[in-house]
Image 1 (cartoon, rainbow, N blue to C red):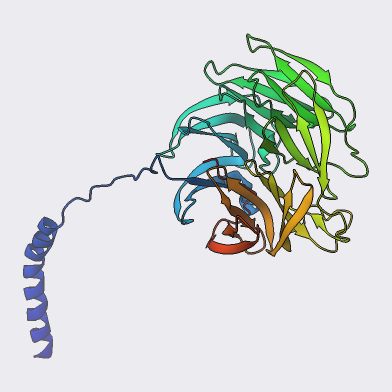
Image 2: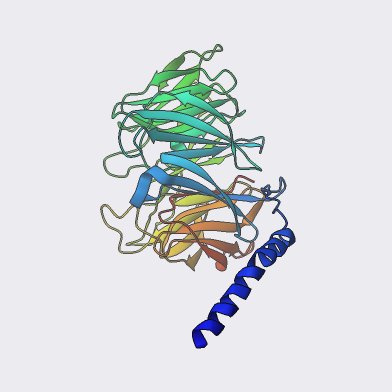
Length: 383
């Protein structure tokens, strides 16, 4: 009896199932899949992460600089580099890809991303020479008018690949013993590199963009006792550099050869402190104030140590004007449009942080954060 009752109920359910299924299918409407665009007027923050635990899968995160909300991501392959175009419409990403993901034939390209859709719209083939390094800003640069790309090579022999974006043609400019690229600010056919003997080499590119003329400077820094970080910040007629011990140097690169002058010592009277990190300082070009990531108990080899404090230093007055607690940072930058906000990479906690700067005292306080990525190494706020 019980078995017969259960069988009857089961048969009834089966008889109703097709009609129920049809009713539900009719109720379901096809989903319209859309892809959001990043608003053109949104202030952008780009974070480059080479994801060291699985380096074939590098990426560039795009965030809203006002809220630190994540808006999208661009792939950067193995040991990628990035540079945002001055027209605010394109992002260039140098990437390496291997035939079998982790092995096989290597292909190098510069991927051209649309700044709003974050999709690849073009790519430029380049020689497989570029430096397989962390994404330091000065290893992959656009020239002053955005028409050429300068890409650092290291095989380990050092040279620079010069790429004309419009024609996609390139040539290799030899640069033995030199590393880092610093485009002239007023001459699109010129850039400089730092050299291991304490000099700089200036490259002047021919009008047909097929060759370069080189000229070396006099020695202006001590690579043995107080090296320069390759990271530099543009300011007026040249670049601001920082030594491992905390001394600033202004270097003009627009002439046939570079010229340099000392611009102060941030650690004067501050024994045991030194800068550290991969992107160890940034400069507000309007006010001439530099913000440095600093750590105490400094020693030989601690030049990439995470921060304990951020110091504000007036380059014009050559004076330390503020010290603020800020732990764990390995990179710092600011947006030219809003120099009272800093952005940092917390390499200890894998966070991106937003920091407010008091325009009078130059003291710094936390103003937001987001957990992001695995091994972020470069942060840029180009607008």
